[in-house]
Image (tube, rainbow, N blue to C red; front, side, top):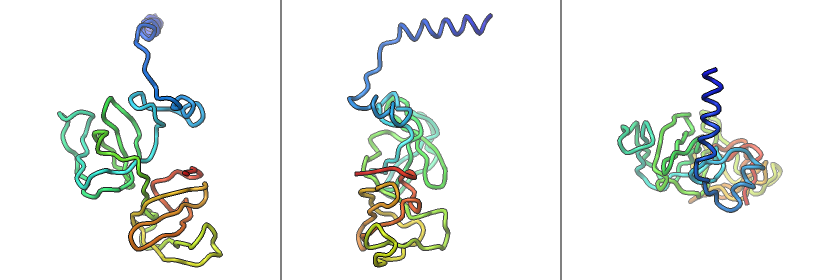
Length: 180
C-alpha cells in the first residue's frame, strides 16, 4: 500500500516538474546511443579531457566536498559517468572516480596508449593498416590527441609522433566508436 502511494505521489510530482531543456540534437543522440545527462543533454558516459594542469577532484558535487586528489596534467582523458548541475563525475584510466567542475573539462579528445598493458609497446602505423610502415612503438601510458576513428583505427598524434593505432589499444575512445 505504501509503495502504491509513493508511486502515485512520484508520478504526480513528475507532472508538476518543469520541463528540462535539452540542446537540439541531444534527444536524437539519446534515442540512438542511450542515456543523456540532465544538465548538459550530452551522452552519459562520454570521454572528455582535462583542460588545466591542476584539476581538483572532489568527493561530491559541490565546493563544500573535500578534495580527494588533484590531477596535475592537462589533456588527460577522463570518462564522464554522471552529472549534477555544473558538476561532472569522472573516472580516470585507473578506475578512480570523483567530481570536477564542468569548466575544468574540454571536449578535445585525447587517449592513453593501453595503460593496462604494462611494459608492452603498441605499434603506431603510417596508415590504418597493419601492412603499412611502422612509425613508432609507443609505451603504455603515452598521451596523445585522437582524431578520426573509424571504429577500428584512430589517428593518434602529438609532438614527435603521428600515425594510426588500433582503437582497442587506446583508453579514451570506446570500442567501435566513430569520431570524425
